[in-house]
Image 1: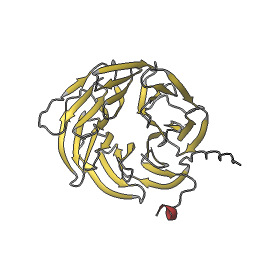
Image 2: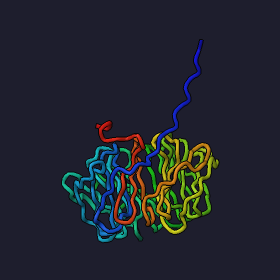
Image 3: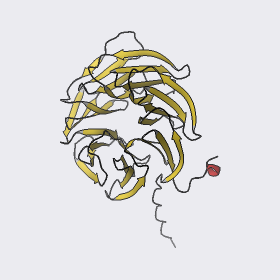
Length: 314
């Protein structure tokens, strides 16, 4: 006699506050996990970039080299280098262990909103309010970008990079995807200014947040609208969004002090997580675990699933 298979358990969400860290660097503009999720970066309005062990609440290093507030940062695949950008129109490449500036890249005509390494960390890609994406060679001494993508009609708010694709969101209301293998660019018009874009973990979909308080999930290849997610508030600020580590839920920051989770397939609101009184400016989801970082005002928060305990983690 065959017994019926047990129903799959619903995925847990990071609704348990584990740690709050006062960063002491003014307003935290962005928080970013490193590639393996052991460390994180915080970008401050006081011109500093800080490296943390968020799981233990330990500050590891402070990086100072920007002239104005730091808006975004990313780590390389081997954790040996960092890149950052800010309101000083500059992209900076850092040596992690020494805490020193390796190079500064200048060429953007306005503040730089977002940075990403390519897969090998040989190129830094930066997006600016000057409507361009610029590619900088980390290994050469040449001062000029090796490529400029200027198809956008307004500022670049967000970029994501895979081994062969670049996904960008612009204030002109378009999502653009550059395929480096074929040399082609595809654009999907959303209409409202886009604040953040993200790939799904399976690489089949793209997610975009916009200033009409709506998240849209698109088929990456066809541009078909697969889902819309609403209920949060996003009218004035550039806020982060992403998918959870197993692509089960859509996650987004909100201007009402919460982080919202929606079921990816059903589109229903699953959880609204109260983070603080101010705008939740940024979030970062752990690459493999049910774990999330949020940033509001001058602090960051570490969240885990309800069943998590430090004893079982050790």
